Length: 358
Image 1 (cartoon, rainbow, N blue to C red):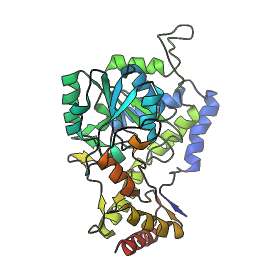
Image 2: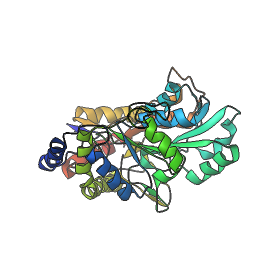
Image 3: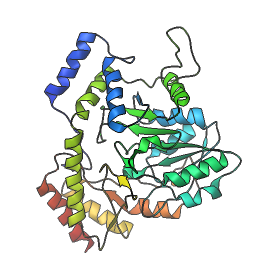
């Protein structure tokens, strides 16, 4: 069976070496030595000033909205994973959708200003499949209207834009370290803020608001990660060159062999060093997608309709119509992409797709 993704598992022996350190320390959580080491290594690897590792990739969105959303209207994209919208609603804010660019698939920055009201407090945009938003334009709009900017960068580990870490844009950026991501801690995530005071707020917020064992800075939540997860992160990090090179080869195969007279794919924004996190193809019609998906499933190949549906159509938000996002969401399919995908498997996938769309 070929799934859309497959968790990268490092050498068991290498992971066990990290576990032995945990047993020796007798420390399983509450910012142990392995977590501190992982944060330092990721700071250097990603070229960021601050990083706070969390126990999943959704809590960072909730924390960011708790600190910056202030219960207001949040301008956001309808083309993202449901967690982006769910976090807004969960934190008692109101999502206000803005349609997407049909090529980059990120929020259409030219439509943001028209959606701003006196209740708008922040912009929450997604770097779709690791493809950066138009960060310069969004920054100009945010400054003009005194808005905060949060980036859902769940897919953007290691991405750079104009030689700068994508996590260095906006007031807060978030990332997912879920097992399906190219870098993972089994389950986990991270928060990034350039401002030291804001990073301090995030830090105490992720640990119940603690300021030492008997005092509190303020309101907090439990977003801590365990040493077992940190051990996985430290082990996986040492394989990043292998992971990226392998995924790059899969993407190159798709680019070379798929029939792009009948298909489209995402356009990566100029000046971006991409991370090959996902490989979406966009069909001319939804019926064409369904036909191809069935043929692949019948051959034990399981791509994913991702992102689907367009988030403005979810019942608990009942957003306005978003024609571009709704159209793309109905026609987009993410193909299998992971370390260890064999050339023979890629040949099978491409042959089935090209045959069915002709």
